[in-house]
Length: 471
Image (cartoon, rainbow, N blue to C red; front, top):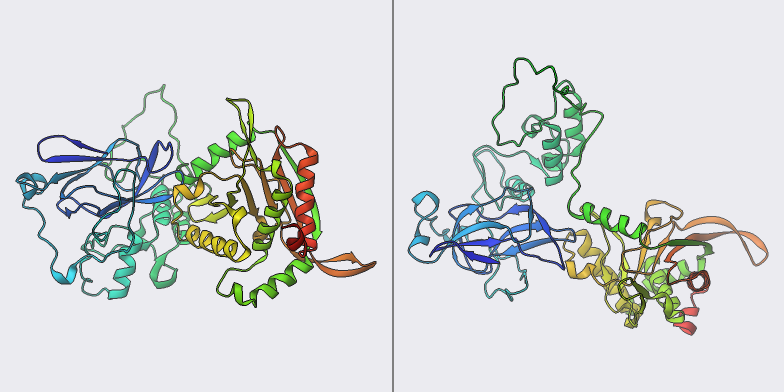
């Protein structure tokens, strides 16, 4: 991913950090022109259609140029940073200036403890380093300065005037609405500006047009009179509309769902089931010594019930090969779990879930959820899924008609578990009830097979002792 442009300067190109990705957005730069970098040092963080990934530089030298600002979407293979490699030319920074002096001992960058690995790089032999942070400015408390540096995402670079505290999505919103963060009074904890603060600021200035040109471009004076044939100028009422660019995870999700909806003929079936005994079992498992420290919740038993149903009906675990006109039966289950994250909806999967015991499945689920919430899900974790579960019940929704993940044959939606009147042993009693919905690809799953799988899942959740006899 590097190119020699002369005897001493190399270009680092945007790599393909996943399978077949074509572009990535630069989220953060951890270095600036003049900084010294070493082999394996993380220089930036990018967001692909699948995950946020840190990119290490594969050689030593001095940063010459950052080709793109943060927030730019760059095609794979495009140079994003130039570095003067170690040698005579590397002793100077851009413009012929001396390279930045090494940081003093008290400003040594802290190792992150992570060892990013990209194809062709191997594991870095040195600790990952980021640009050293300067000390807090006069009048700015130390902890607040640290929070500011993290939220601003500039590797700890401190401007002469403190930057307003705001997360990157809020900064993007303010930019789209043409709102200056410096004039906003923050309402969030620790003085952080929220989305509501930005919208409130935009509301009081609805007579101003949204800035359309990049912030760095000089303002252009409007012509005294537009030609008679020109179209009228268009302005948007920022209190009534917000325009959000479609990219990253949202763009990939949209493309995948359109492809799924118009490629695979979907069928969805529903069943409402009494899960009172399953809920009791969840409480019992929380006290079990073998489950201590693990995530035990209804989703764990629902996942296990689906795995049991797949074992009894293995034809459901398949995919459709359009090119070969074949049905590909999978002898393994990579169980996808749909997760709502700040970056959008992602579906990482538990590899070989069919081979896991209940404690192992609980551990894998816990790791999957934690990693997704922290935004650290890798592209590999979202590839190769065979069947998926989406838990819409966490939002208080009864059920839905989920769309298949591309390449998968089935997806199970789990609705909210609610206390409802239910006929139990001939009497109406309050019972814990939920509704399940199974969508499947009707090219390879007929109504009989889909119904058997859904009925088996429901049967296990109604009588969880079947986990022992069927599993």
